[in-house]
Amino acid sequence: MTISMFNTVTRTAALAACSAALLAAVAGCRVGPKYTAPAPPPVTAASYKELPVKFQDTGDWKVASPQDAMLRGKWWEIYNEPELNTLEEQLQIDNQNIKVYFQNFMQARALIAEARSQYWPTVTTSPGWNRSRSSSNLTNSSQANIGRQSNLLTFPIDVSWEPDLWGKIRNEVREAQYGAQVSAADLENEKLTEEASLAQYFFEIRGQDALQKILDDTVAADQKALDLTKSLYDTGVDNYISVVEAQATLDSARAQATNLGIARAQYEHAIAVLLGKVASDFSIPVRPMMYVPPPIPTGMPSQLLQRRPDIAAAERTLAEENATIGIGYGAFFPSLTLSATGGFEASTFTHWFDWPSRFWSIGPSVSETLFNGWLYRAQLHQYVAIYNADVATYRQTVLTAFQQVEDSLSSVRIYSQQIQQQQQAVSSAQQFLNLETSRYQTGVDPYIDVLTAQNTYLSDQQSLALIQVQRMVGSVQLVQALGGGWDSSQLPTPSQVSQKTKAADYQIQH
Image 1 (cartoon, rainbow, N blue to C red):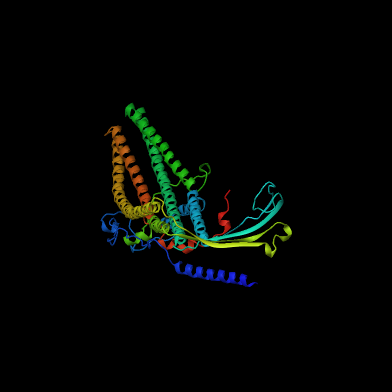
Image 2 (cartoon, one colour; image 1 turned 90 degrees about the horizontal axis):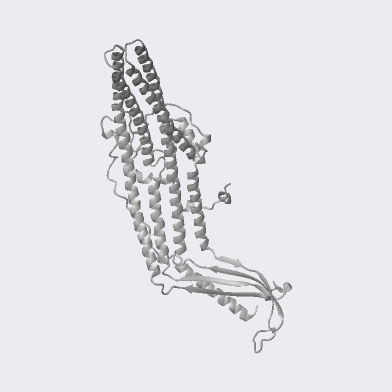
């Protein structure tokens, strides 16, 4: 090595050392506001306002004790319905909407890897071969080889790296990490929505089966009444109008019984879609059943913020937008790019990779926007406005969550009271029908009074069945409003969503 080359290497090493020291000094800089989760609307109540324990005559539905308990895991198992459990397990595997949200989550994780790739230098190469001939009529030219042919073989390596002086890349990584957390919370919220929809449709179907039995029994009773009026008419005890009225009542009951098939079929088809099955290949057996909702642990109002995945998504969205503001601040500062190029070039293959064929260059560059019509300031204001809007969205999500819990508690509690009252109405209507039937058979009252009693009894039975179904649906909605079996501890951390994924996780689906 010559003295001049030694001096060159020494100066290069010194420059590199100074650059490294400078980078180390500014590497800890990160502009932008530090994120602090906003305060939610204050929760001062020690318990929910609509809890049944605060009311009298709440019927046969109670809340779990102690009230600070919480649902965990597979919440639908509290209903002790094996058929529902089986359907819910299929839902977790085959529901297409859940798969969409899962792939959205995987996409969000890929975005983290994209952002983190900026930490590393970019290395490119573009080997090439070129044969050319220069003009022979170039007079007074400084070019060599006038009028001669030449070959050029090149194998360059270009390296460029932009150090993260002001935390722009770090903010982009944080933005992607928080975005992945939002996507994870959205996935859990979608799971809860689909699970609750399945449970509601299931109890609706069982309610339709119970209604079908009521109407089938009514058709059978109306057929007996028609046979009785015909017998009495044939013996001259009653007139023909009673026969016509009985026939009309029977036909009306049959029509209502047939109409029930529409709702049941639609609920069955909806469950098929939730399970990722073709509706034509799916059916649920008929089982007339009415349920009493189990005791549901409601927890404390202050716990609701940690139990709802939509609230978690709204809060993580704020963290994501805060990182975006940091990116906006970073645009005001200059960017430094370190680049180097080196490689081999020669005119013949035999000397292409000889050491004298090497070439290289190295040098930093700094870029800064001096004026762009205050674009960066306008963008920063835009990011701040988006963040402030998301703060309001977060608080609105919290308020809506409490509203949904209180709505569901009140509906289940009031339905329980109404069921007690409706059961008494059904008992009274049945007694009324029995008395009127006896009075008609003895010739005391006309058949029109029996029809009135029959319609009253049928109407009260239908109302009771519908209220019982509505109470079960309200019970499922309460579980959903409470967040199901989820809590914020299940939300993956930024480091967890940043873990390296497998290539097999991104295989194209067929």
